[in-house]
Image (tube, rainbow, N blue to C red; front, side, top):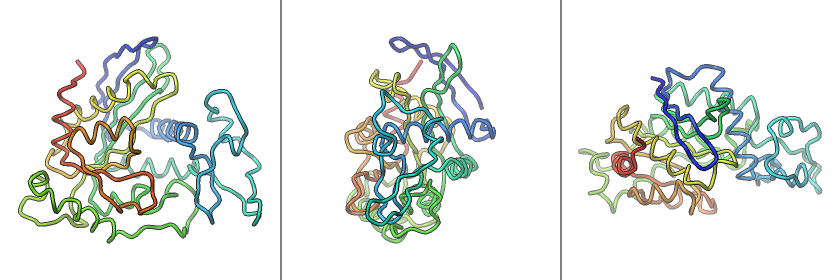
Length: 288
C-alpha cells in the first residue's frame, strides 16, 4: 500500500510516503540502504573500525575535516583504509555497501512498514523511519543486538552478545511492570524466543531537514500509520540513544529501559513498551 501526502517545514515542501513490504522494490531497497549508510557514517560517526578493537572511526578520523556531510560517493570511494598505528591491522567499513544492502533485504522480507520523506521538487530521499514484525529471537539476530558490527563484512567477532542474556534482561525489566505489559504477556509469565515483537529500526534525516521538529513528526506519522496495519498487543523494541528524539518519544509513550540487554558498557540502550502505548501517543499528534 503506497500512500502519500505533503508536509511543509520551513524552507522545504516534502512528500510523505507510507509503504509496506509489498511496495519495496530492489531499487528502493538500495536507495534506503545507501541513505542509511550516508546518515550513520556522518551523523553518528560510524564509518570504519579496526576489527580487533571494534570502536567506530569517524569520517573526520579517516578522511580528514570536511565542511558538512561527506557525500556517499566519497564515503564509498575510499581506496586506502587506515592501518592501526601499532598492529598495522587494516580498518574496514562499519556499514559495508553490499552487506548493508543484504541486511535491508532481510528486514523488508518481514512484515515491514516504512515512512519516507522526499523533496517535492525532485523526489530526493531526505528522511525515513521503518519497522518490522519478527520473533524475539529473530529480532535479536536481525539487528546489531547480537553483533554490533552486523552491517560489516566481518564474519567473526569477539564482540558477539548472547541471546539468553538478552531475553533474560527483557523479562527482568518486565517483571516489575506486569500491569503495563499485560496485553503483551496474555496468560504467560514471560516472553520467549517465539514471542512476536515489533522492531522500530531508526529515524534518519538529511542534515537540512533536522532540527525542525521533523523527527517527531516522522515518528508520530509512523506509529499512527502502523496502527492500521499491525496487532497493537505486541512487544515493541527499539535501540536508542539517550536524549535523542526517538528516546524522548518512546519514554513519553511509556517505554522502559532494559539494563544490560545490549551489554553493560554500551552507551546505546534498548527500550521496550507495548506497541499500543506508542500508537496512542502518536494519534495525539496525527498528521492530517
